[in-house]
Image (cartoon, rainbow, N blue to C red; front, top):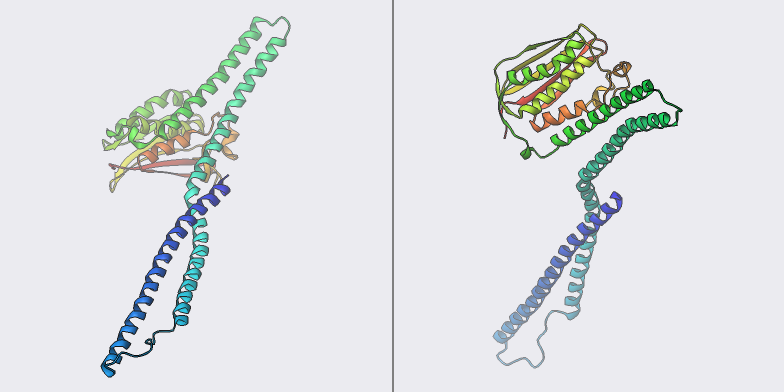
Amino acid sequence: MFHSARIKLTAWYLLIIMAVSVMFSIIIYRDLSNEINRFEQIQRYRIERRLMENFPAPPPTPLPTASPELLSETRHRILLMLVVVNGIIFLVSGGLGYILSGQTLKPIKNMIDEQNRFISDASHELKTPLTSLKIAFEVYLRGKNPTPQEAKTLVTESIDEVNKLQSLSESLLQLAQYERSQEQILFENITLAQVVTEAVKKMKPIADHKNISIISKTSEITIKGNKYGLIDCLVVLLDNAVKYSKEGAKVSVTAGKTDGIVYISVTDHGIGISKKDLPHIFDRFYRADGARIKTTVGGYGLGLSIAKKIVDTHKGTIQVKSKVNVGSTFTIRVPVSFS
């Protein structure tokens, strides 16, 4: 599809360029032809003037002028030169137009490819719990005289699958929310301490369940940002830190300011991330093939994608340093204020 679109766009580029080139060639040929005619008239006038000065009587024969054959050959040479120039322009414009059309369509192609991948991945993730629910109900209906305990087990397992679907749909909606234009997101003056406190408060029940303590160290630094977005971003990082840490471990959150840039770091001492997985952890639906999938932790690989989108809306960066079986440190950096 994109190849044919590229060819069509190249043809339009070429048509426009050649139309302009031919138009200018016609103008140039007309002006040069007029100059040749003017030159011929000037030569004839000069010859007549000289003859009148030397011979008072009018010459009995027509005055000699520039050779008609020479004038015709000059016009043909000009026309040939213009044809050659237009041919060169045609070839060069075709090549450059093909390259330019490729560069023009590349962002559109990347966007559509990403959208197709997203639809494919989302469909796959939705299909798994739906298939599980369908099979469970079919097995139950085929059974003879199901007991109340079997019905209770089915309902319990079905609720788990529905919870997974709900979690996935909420993550997809959250990701779509932060992919909207920046003008639709509210930015206001907030403090880092407020963001960290709210995020830690949301994660405390989960951390307490694993006997993990979250230690925060921050200050009353005011920045311009989206309060709920930054809280969601920090919750994602804390959630990962808690998930992939052993029971009784510690997770630390530090925040500060350097040279007009605010940073928030989340450090855990969990299982870490392998080097081959690090470049892809912010991709949607990406889940590592290494140490992290050795745990029983569930998820759809959307959390870090959401976190990165939130940071992008704040014109900031998010980086990670990690070592397997040692731990990970995620650092968010955003400007104090931006326009």
